[in-house]
Image (cartoon, rainbow, N blue to C red; front, top):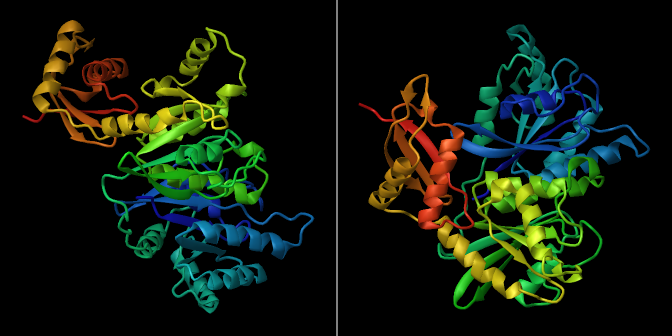
Length: 438
């Protein structure tokens, strides 16, 4: 299920980025005491009371050629459209301003849950300054201090309380959900139409960024049920100029969360660029099964070495996706498009595969016999046994004498041994080291 989305909204210089960094636990947003310093919306994950959520740090209103209220409304409307819960942040030292009142009017019309946070209340004596904020009409204001980390617990209690109960999936458990992600204009919408066998089911255009939202389309193939999610193209932050397009990244991330399989689409004409790796990294980090789709293969002049050289280059750039199969297709001519759904079936099956513990440990013991465990300061790693504890992605716990002795390189060796024995094509594998209890 996709995580709930929390947006932090407010006029400039009320401390939104500082609170964002406190919630996500790392310094992602640039924090300066200058209005408008956050020029891009920044997305990350937060957790409170064992509930995970996505959080948006919205940019403040920048003074430019457009009137202030027009820019304010654009910022607030976009955040409202994406958020499940909104943290409306105001400055407790300055009191209510006309800009605060304008944002409040917009939030009232949204009908979304709003948690009012009064920032810069750095001590108990200052809490008497919060009472005027009741007049904004959002119930109890929560006094917080971004600089000192005060009051965030009470505020987040109210935020997670406002999340809706997760909706039940309408599709059966046997339904395979897959999404297409990639830079703008790599042909995701055209590829979706080719897979569905229906022209113009999704709007197709040569203009980058035509698809704004993730579009779910259920279909059946050879008696199996699928849902394809076509997503907006993802660009690196410095190249995004339209504010609506900045939200397409979050939409694509939410689509990945709802997917069993992710198709990472690359433009074969343009080759591989750095942004392709970042986009693929989202799917890998989310633990989804991955297929790399090289689209527009028909437009490339080829000889007998072209595909081999392209794959060698691709593998060198996507070393973290060495498990992902590669398909060379053309949405325009439908060349090899028919191979996509069968490959989705294969990697989805591997993504949900369980390995019997006895077979798994036979493989691990053979691997240790072939390549003995490493030592550190005369202490040798001892592997007692391994057990699979989860699927989607397949996750294994290996019980050892000292988890710190399981170096990355040997963990990689164990993963490769498991893949050699059981396949797991198209899916990441997680290996977690645990100390065996006495």
